[in-house]
Length: 353
Image (cartoon, rainbow, N blue to C red):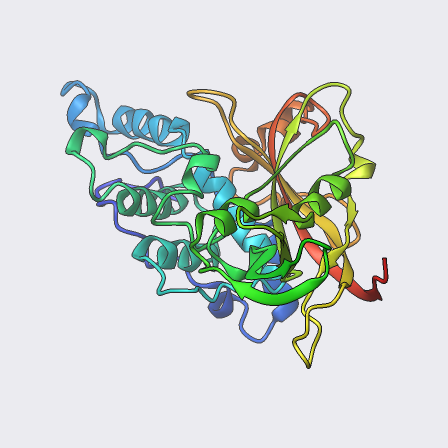
C-alpha cells in the first residue's frame, strides 16, 4: 500500500463502505465485523503548518502519522466499539426525539467497515470531533472529553441516557396510600429530574449488584402522605456506573444479574403487587479514564459470557496495546467502570407479600 499524501481535509472518507455493502447478503459476516473489527487509535490532525519548512516530504508524513496516531481520541474509539457491539446484539437505536447530527454520524460511522486503514479511521473520528466541538472557539476545536463525559453530552444523550432501550424505570409510578395499598397510577414526564436520576444507575463493589438495583423500586415517601413506587420497563439493555474499591466483587458475580422489577398489571391497569424478575448478562465493560490524559478502555463479551478477541486486521499491534503488552486490566481493580448488560429473560412472578 502506498503511503497517503495527507493532502485531505477532515471530512469523513466516503471510500469506506458500509458493512451492508462490503458483506452484502452475508449477515454472519456483518455481525462478526461489528463485534471484532476495531478502529485504529488516534484522529486526523492537520498541523503541518506547525512543522519546520526544511523537513522533507517523507519526514513530514512520518511526523504527521505519528501525531495522528498518538492523539487521544480513545473515548470515541470506545463509543464506536460499543455501539457496533450493541448493534450486533439487536440494539434498537430509535430515538425519543430526532437524532442530533453527531448521533447520526456516530451510527453511520459504527456501521462502516472500519479498522483496515489507519488514516481512514482517523478521518472518520476527526469528523465526529468536529461535530462535537462545532460551537466551540477555534483554539478548542480538538477538545475530546473522556467517555463518561462524552456519553452525557447534550449532542449524544439519545444514544444511551435518553434512549428507551436503556431506561430501567418508566415515567409511570404507583401511588400507594399510608397502609401501602395501591390507590392509583400516576406519571411524570420522561425528562423529570427524578426519572432521569433514577435511570442513571450507580452501584459499587461493596454489595451485590442485584440488591443495589432492586432498591430503585423501594417505596419512597411522598410529602403529602403515602408512597411512590416506580414501575420497570425491563429494558433490552442496562447501563450501570460501577465504582470499585477493595475488597471487590469477582467478575463471576457480575456476569449474570437478576432483580425483582415491579410492572403494570395488564390488561386492567389496576395497580397490584405484580412483578417480573428479568435476568441480564454482561455484554461489555468500559474502564473509565482516571484523570486528565487518561485512557478509556473497553472489553466486550458474547451472549455466553466469553470475552470477544478483536480481529487482527490493519495495524493490530498499534490498536490493542493491552493485548500486545500482555498486561490486560481487570474489573476487579480499583476504579470507575461502565457495565452494559443484555436482557436474557424475564419470568413473571405474582408477589403476594
